[in-house]
Length: 269
Image 1: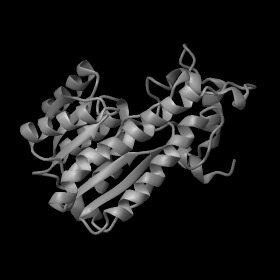
Image 2 (image 1 turned 60 degrees about the vertical axis):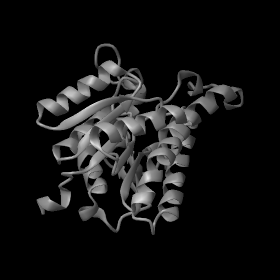
Image 3 (image 1 turned 90 degrees about the vertical axis):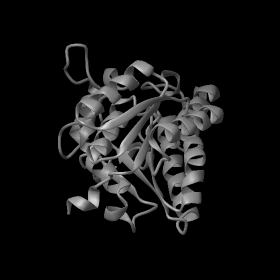
């Protein structure tokens, strides 16, 4: 069975690998034998991820890239190929929300700034899936093999209060995933998504926890709605990511959205 998940000889490009979720996936892919390119804008965090992979006996390199710029991604693709080989696996883990696109309790949706909405869509859909899939997917289609894994969100399936722009953008990521899966189904390139539930990270920690470490009202509501009664840990995405990346294990899986949310989406609101 271990051979099903052996990624030896393959190269993975993890866009947004400098973050908590992307970094955990990058480490998991490396642990299964893949050479991993950690792509992102923050060189310090990227090199820390690379160091963690190398300390564990893996092979990795940090490649600076801005997922919202095609020219930057093209340069990154060339750098990855030169250092580690052409990417067989692409993980699109860039994304996030903006404070000005979040609706506080009692706020007016009609006053949500268009610029904020567009910024969230650019970050999560254009940079978080579209452009990297175009740039790294092109040589995959030409080679007749590859696995693209988009990081969507449980919020893309169940629209949540306050984060309307983020939820809508992630819903678009899921839709794009299904489109590309159908578009490239006969080329040997598989396209799937992972939809995490609530995983504490720098961008949402203040939403979930008070300064003393206790749960905020919002955090308590989320835990109360989650059957497993806890938040997720980044490493809990590792198994799903490796499974989707490994062609021997998931060769007939494409166009799917795998939810990892502790049961949150199974509960009726």
